[in-house]
Image 1 (cartoon, rainbow, N blue to C red):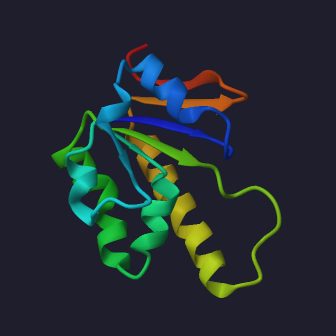
Image 2: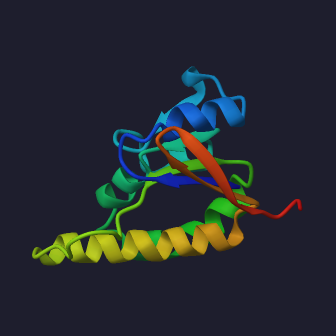
Length: 130
């Protein structure tokens, strides 16, 4: 699996498509896809929205890293970083931010590659092939 992180509107999707040679038509949007689409997606963008949509299914989310690696080990996931800034007042938003962060840590640990994109410029922060 490959994991691409960065702030909102930083060019993560364009970067990932270019680096991993993925056509825009092969990109699955986590904002609107069904729950199991992540297991077939070549690349899933808006992973943070995917997590938010299925937050009520905590057991599914906690098993997601292992299940994803088992069922779709070549997937490319693209997500916003959410852990910076002010801690949300709303309990749901705090829980969402925490679960998203924990899932990102688990996925990054298992990913072959992790890239961070800022202003459209990617930096490889993990490459297991090296």
